[in-house]
Structures are given as C-alpha cells and as structure tokens.
Amino acid sequence: MEEPINVFVLGTAGCGKSTLVAAYADWMYRNQYSTTLVNLDPGVETLPYEPDVDVRDLFTLSEVMEDYSLGPNGAQIVAADMLALNAKKLKDDISSKESHYIIYDTPGQLELFTFREASKELMNGLYPKRSAMLYLIDPFNAKTPSGFISQLMLSSLCKLRFQIPSMDLISKMDMITFEDEERLQGWIDHPERLLDDTFTESSQTGSLNVELNIGIHRALDEMGQFGNIRKASSVTQNGVEEIYRFVQMALGAGEDLEKI
Image (tube, rainbow, N blue to C red; front, side):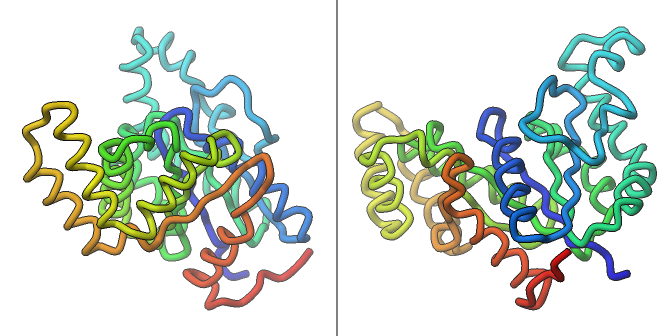
C-alpha cells in the first residue's frame, strides 16, 4: 500500500484547529474517502471529533505534570519532546488503520510544536515525503495591519521549519463581520493597501518601526504569501473542498483519492 497522505493543522491557540479538523473529516467521510484522525495534543480535555489515534492514550499533560513534578508550562515542554519519543508507536497505530488520508490536530502551543527540534523529528518519523501543512490564521488576531502581518510571519516561520507544502487559511469566517472580511480580502488582493494601512497604524500609535514594517511586508510579498491565502469556516464548511484540492495537487499529482 502506498504511504498515506498526511495533513498537519497548525495555528495559534484558539484559532479553530480542532473544529476545522472535525469539519474537514466530516467532508472527507461524506465524500467516501478513508480518513484517520490523529490528536497530538496531550493537554486537550474535549474534542469536537472522535480521534482514531490519540496521544492521550500514551500520556496526558496532567500525567506529565505529576510524574515530573512540573507546572503546566514545563510539562508542555516535556510533552513536546515525548511526542517525538513516541513517533514509532504513533506511526504503528496510524498504519494499522490502513487509511489513505491522515489529518493531524497539533497542540495549541504553536511555539512548542514549531520551534522545538522534537517536532521535526516527529514529522520525519511519520511520513515526511507525503505531508502537507495547513496554517490557520485567526481573523480576530488579524484585524489590524500589524496583527495580520504578524500572523503571516508565524506562517512563514512554520514553513521554514517544516519545509513541506503549505496552505494558509483564515479560519472562523462565519464569526466575523462583513466589514472585517472585506478589509482582509482587500489586503490579500492588494498588498500595497496593507502597506498603506500599516503606515497609518504606525502614525496613529506612534510606532517608530516604519522601516521594519516595510522590510517585513516586502519579504512577505516576495515570498508570495499574499497570493496563497484562502478563507474557511468550520460551521458552513466553506473552503474545506479547497483544502482537499490543494493537498491533492501538492501530494497526489492532482488525482482524486480512491473512494471507500
């Protein structure tokens, strides 16, 4: 059997990773594609889906806190490293499901999952040549020009770290106003408008980082960050089919998955 396609969902805490995973899985099931859901967050208490493979079956954050006499922050660091140590067990459990498609719900602490070497080792221990990444942008953290640019910078850092095909998604589109959506779309379609709004924001807040704003904006534009942003809603499932098409183009040569 060919190695499965693997999709890692990343983003800052509260950006809607778990609900998007649930919506994406629902779309896959309805279209008769075999899919395995993997929860990689040992600290989550409830999930909007039933994981097929769950890191909490190996260890939980509360167990790490108790076993190592750590507080929540220290336990998160240890748990991030323990993910990599358990990569073989996770891969064995995932392989036993014999699915063509694996969706990974990553921990809420983006900085721990992204910037610790253990996470790269985890990905390399799974299916590195058949993996793609979805980065979720929380629209509530992207209402201002500096907030939007900061979100794109985090996405760029994730791409730099993992070096796999990636797609940016503005999540929770059903929760924002029409005006906010129009402003975000304007920045995506016309990056020069974002730069102008950044200057306005800097003048209003008294920021002295005008040169920094110009430099970051230019770097993001040159990397093509603005042209690869899509919008999605877990509630309406708008944008979910676009995720599937992106992944199949990146990893499946544009071919559809075999249906169940």
